Length: 365
Ligand SMILES: [Zn+2]
Image 1: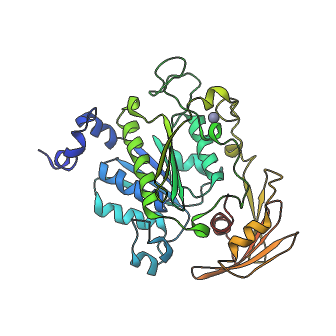
Image 2: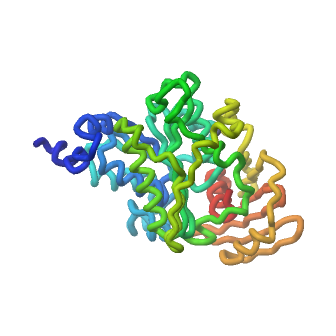
Image 3: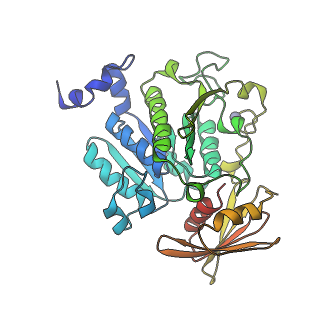
């Protein structure tokens, strides 16, 4: 047995897998969208499984609060403030040197997704906000790329394998002209992003590491089925777990495509990819600040609710017109000014990526 055969022997034994399945994995490229807790777990499992090329996009650096759940990183990465994508690349090279890993330190947006997604056979979701998920979903549907949605916060998590309907209905997962085998997309399931401030984030309510790794494991299983060509094994339901209350639900969502009139996969409108929906970021010259504007208006932000959550992280003053919070984030100090229409000004940085990160962590979208 060759080294490669030995390495993947226990995986190749799986039903419907074999050496052909392994060969297919080796010839595949997976784009990992975000390398936090979900993304680092997925990246590790996919590298161990022998997916030939992993492209990891992430905008952040490793911080001490990450180590509780982000399995690829260690204390040295924190001390040296290593970007997550790069820290992941160097760790994965030690785990499986036969896998190619491309590390991209960038904030995924409608202007760069085509470049980063070039050549990807699948998207694996490790994102921390809905806006970027919709962007990924737009691109996946438009280009017929499977998208493994996943999210986890607190003790709950959800995951779903999205296999887009394609115009010609001839993708390998579309078993017939009616497109059976294709699934609803993310906007079929959740047409609008929840208003900012209404969804909990890991930074406001915490996160149980095993909830995240459970979701990531599910995403990876579905990814391996797709890449090895085992489309008949794809889970047709949306997984919903709460590891604290011990509930596991498999939600039947297959009808969401037929019942709805999805702007993305039915009407062919790619609002996030076109840049017509989503947050615009403007650096405010000379003020060490970035303004984030939501184009999806009015978002109706509940400032009292956001203020209550932010008080755990710093000094907060709120009026009916705006909320202002001083936040110490790692070694940096930011002042967040938030308006009821969802607009925010983040002082303490002139980098749109950093400002978006602060917004996603403390306000959430
Ligand atoms: Zn859809």
